[in-house]
Length: 320
Image 1 (cartoon, rainbow, N blue to C red):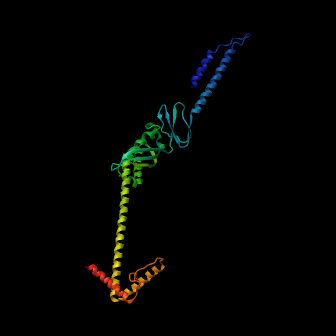
Image 2 (cartoon, rainbow, N blue to C red):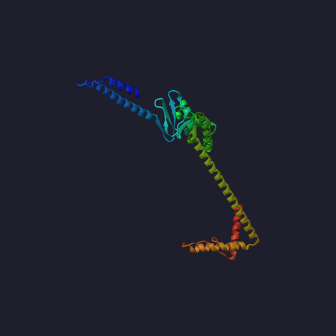
């Protein structure tokens, strides 16, 4: 470029009209002026070319980046340039800057589980290129290496791992599923010199039909548990009734034996019943006209005999 500018200025100088000779001599003044002008222009062009060369021979690599250089004569150079100021030959060499910081890549895919349930799974990968293999990556994958490699690898590995588990195992063994997916993706991406720092399952959803079936199963299990507790409660209530009946039967046997051994037991019970009835009647504001024998208030000696006779008459009536 500097040579072209120099040639253009020389042509301009040759085409400039010569100044006429001044009277009295000095015919060589016009030639001296043209020579001086051409020398000045050449100096300026040389300085401009030198500045252009110096400016384009330097390039800066920012933090978290690396550079590789393409040479027009020998192709890609094997050297990987680090951060800071670096040198190259203008026009003959061209620097290519790579970002080697960790970046995310997200993928969501629909696949099937081992028991043929459709599952929507989302996977996030944190990746970066291998700084020592940037020349290989540029020659075979280019600048957008992650778009060329990771989506297909993530999709294939996620589907291969999910197919090994049942739908319920994807929930109960989620950590193991994530570890298996990471192992598969790391093994596949290492062949492309892509480093992985983390692999995580960000989304896991089943089909609406499966979700409804799981909900119905949970409801049925809860109903079964509730029915089991109802049965346990009924058995407990039955046992309580049986125990109570046995207690009442035992109490009746004890009372019967007490009456047989000591007839005065019935009189004692009559006195206790009469005391309770008399207390209730005395506190009532109503007027009561009833037989004292019916209210068990007659505590005379012949009352027991009448009561016993009445009971025996009733027994004879029901026996007929």
